[in-house]
Length: 466
Image (cartoon, rainbow, N blue to C red; front, side, top):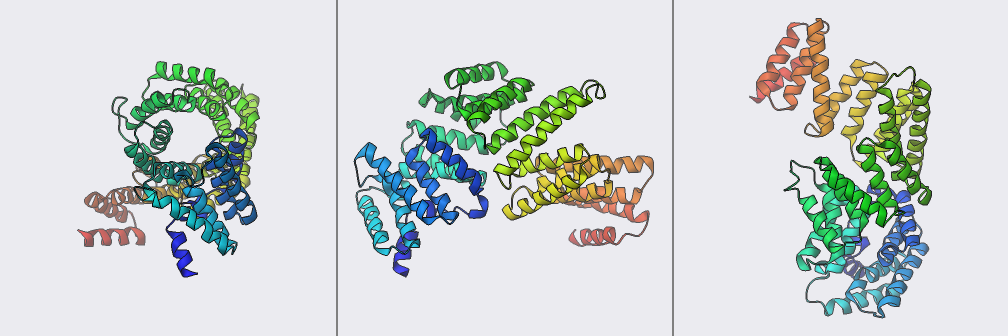
């Protein structure tokens, strides 16, 4: 049995790619993959992925059924039993039969993989078709796997640079991972999206992704032209509608964004992403209204706020652990002074972030904002701004936390209230940034306004570290 397991561990398939159950929103992914099945998008890949999701959910018979469907679909198109494109399907079938204690069947599929590998000029891990499905799977299963997805598509392109779908996969993976100081001329993702569109001229999703990235660099004319082309070419494609809706919302045209996203929602009513994006469009519309006479528009603002909450509740219902949507929902509960619901949602969000080990610093920042602006609890806000800054000082939220803490400290010093604590806050900021001498100076000032064990401990630790 150990020998069998050793052979299984050497396969290239979903069971050996390190897909961690806690990283994956299984319910959301299940819905997405079923939607792809209906649209007949990447059928063999989709059934392979759906089979693994069913296995993780504990439905082994369903998993086996989906794998057999994947195999049948491939053979209908290609009439081949030992093609390299079947490495993953056969590997998955070996694994599922192993888990179901069908050891003879397991051995049979292992033999099929072995026969394919004997005809390969390289390891199966370097087969472009394997890298393609692996990259696609990483992209679909979790945002956390975006870097792995990018690596897979890059390796496939290094082997066969002209293949359209690998150029597309690499472009989308880059879109998810490129966050740096670039210009429109040297941005790798813009360059790759243009290359992907050249090799996939009918792929309208790529066009709206390029439009969104161009808009970041204020190239609005080309961006809007690409969006209009995409909408003309794929007026009912849910991803095109979703990204186009985001584009118009970001451009300050929330009504058009809302119209597009409502259309997308009719096709995918359980899409947590579309509900979330609709909520953000309505939020943009709310902000525009609040820039006018707030009191005169209060009923209209409340109506929009209700829509935001409705869509966020649907987003969190259809995707458990959707942290960004949960944060927005908690903040909007707080905005309408439903503090009990807001606190409850924030606690759920903290738990989800800890369980997923994902974006906990973001939750701390927004909880601080909720305490500062909605509940007017400056002490608790300071605590959570500090937690965010400690966790991710270089992140967007970390930098904003630093700014907010500085503002609070400076305000206290200017008003001559809680001055010792204010210098303690400034000392903490300097300490987290590695500015030891400035931190010591601030902590000494803090202590001069009264005893504080925490300031003294920090001061002693800093002096010893110099």
